[in-house]
Length: 286
Image (tube, rainbow, N blue to C red):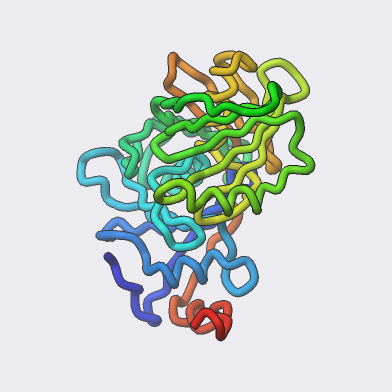
């Protein structure tokens, strides 16, 4: 594992979001592993830090791809892959002149992913699509009511997709938090309902290691895969996340995610200062 650079050596992040799912990205080609957990937690804290759903390092892929990705959720835990995270990392890699658009590859813990990146009219706005690989469906779980369905979906990371008649009254945080102890290593939980038109879904999501977020890329793909298996949508699906619409396209069981990505800011961080100003730990938790 890498250690935190000394305070005299600042960390230079860029911040990006895809439909409100935001990440801090660090170009760290010499990295040998993730950042310290306490630093990631402090960075992602929206009151005592910079604020983000996760932190990513762009690392040397050692010939396996054009660049590599190390991803940590807001709690500091490592994650296999993130659809929106990949799209944000792609923008950071392009702006950092590490790759040449439109097409390049990123090595993740869930395998090498193909990216297509198209710059917008402004330097801070782009559209990116990523190959998320095969969606692997688990069995349908029996439900008491015909308008409710549940099944697991593996997108290289674990998901549970829950279909219901509506999302307004769903306790996303409570149900999502309770399910973390049910699945070894935790799980992403998608709550979906039919959208306002054909091939459209509404989604709210609990991301493991983060909580409820405004969007989830792999979660949108998992939701679309489950809904397609239930005959609710076809091969092209608009998934309406609270932070914006993401588009999922299937070729067989292989999913591709497309949507906007925005550069927000460049952030220079003194690790010692961030840790010194971290959220106080309650005395009962010490």
